[in-house]
Length: 320
Image (cartoon, rainbow, N blue to C red; front, side, top):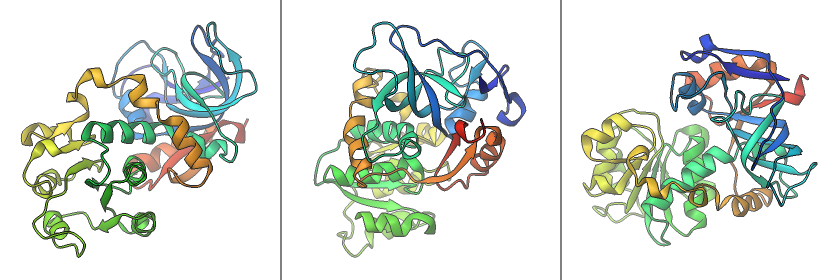
């Protein structure tokens, strides 16, 4: 089969290549799918640079949707021919989702009404957003500020919070501001003066801080403003992106939360619910572009530019 893989660590454009690789066997507790769509994300490029280093070669593409074609020992509740979405076993295999076939370590049924492309856009954004929001507290009636709501994780977080009954303030640019407002979020621009703009919002009592803040934007110096918006309390702010500034300010970050909270149930237990919402048109992760597998380098360049404006997906079946 074809697979996008790297054999040494380094810059993605230099170490990744599309090559012929063995078709993987699912093994116990795993399934293998014929990949219909595979999502790419900045986390994939971090793997190329050595994040979670392990045995090489290794593939990229953690988000997968496809058709089950082999079931490993001990697996129940799924059969050959089923449509599933979830995550590729990137750490335990020499290839991942960016391939004609992939072994999956977590999978869920794709409900009727949800196509495989939209399903493949869900896993990482949904898992990351929900886990972080749960750490902050998804209590109805609270006010959440999502910084970087135009990112896939931020866009997912806004929808999750609104669905759980929170009031949401979102920072975003022009690309998604209108869509976020239509969802029910209060939208303001990002950048200098953010805390003052939030305090001055017409439907926000002046001087009343937001209850919790989730920062998903690329590092841009916004964390001090986010702490101000949270009433000066850095523990009300959780970032999944600006780890360096978080350490300086006492802000919470993904890698220093309680490891005991990082369970499969916390990460994936809500997938069936939100897949059903996605099938009903009530939840989405925006798709910015789809590419045949042999155009993976184009997708990489768009992702690395920082202007993807949505999920980028490879479609292995489109060119093979």
